[in-house]
Length: 461
Image (cartoon, rainbow, N blue to C red; front, top):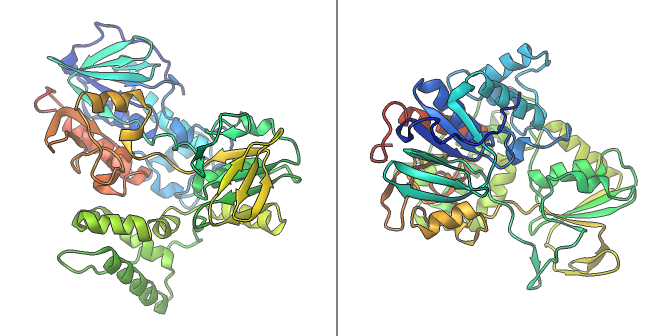
């Protein structure tokens, strides 16, 4: 299903009846679906540059080999309907078990289908990037890059992750060249590679893994190097239906080192009962946000500096079949994972020389998979620049996203709530830490919809 893009008619709905959602990926689509389900009086306007909802970066891939990294049984769009994704799969003739890992692009289809069921005249989509959010008497006027505009009492920022920061090595920014792939998700670049190309992928996270799969699968003469400072790949899920291992936590203040010790002790205790470390990690998922809230700023900073990457590769795991493919590529000698990071990139003719320690690699493509830029003060996004300029938003104290309450209400520089401005998903990372996956985002979307149900004014939105 495709929700057709259209410019918002000026008289489509009164501002008091309208909620404007900025971003049409998973966060924005789930917010729109929940708003339309929760309140028959609400009109929702979604600003999404592509004009098509439900895709975003995560689910806009066209490669069917890119799989979800969460099992289908935990990927429902609705917290109160736990088997909805499985129901949809049965409705659409897809054989899907709760333990399966659905292709990412099919999950995007699921979101669009569920949106189609509640769309109708109360939903408008503006195919434009947002360049400004202006406070007005009725609430906020949201302006698109093409001059389109809509006014609503409330605005929900659901713009997802920012683009990666530019690649800089040895103090030099990598030039804008045909071999420099700044956006790995525009997969057309792979089709232009020679059959025996060597690709250097900067980053070793889930995006880097998807990129390696697309580059190497079906091209037996190609090779790829995944490089990052620590050289750590996400761990693989295991085939087990065990419940999560619940770890006891002490009362009172916590430290990052204390958390690491508790984790190691619980892994050892679980092993004595034949329980894998995977289930210890899963047991921490529920209380993660409350744990994060208990850490003082200095301890959060220590966690990010010392433990974050080791936690991330265990927390955000890859599907077993993806791990098996990577193992196969490594066995064939076509994939290497290297630590230490890139030290320099020297322009060559026609391809650059990439230095990794003492090694020199002639790279047919250099791909930026370093992960999203989190410091909004350095963002090139016109939306964020406008919000910061107007004082409607500020970075959180760790510069992981936007300063906000746990409920997603934006805070200004003085720490005061900005009425009528909320956010869902990755921008809440500094406040919640665990906020980038569907199981958390769907809850946030439902809670925002419940909060905005009924009369909406800038004061109480």
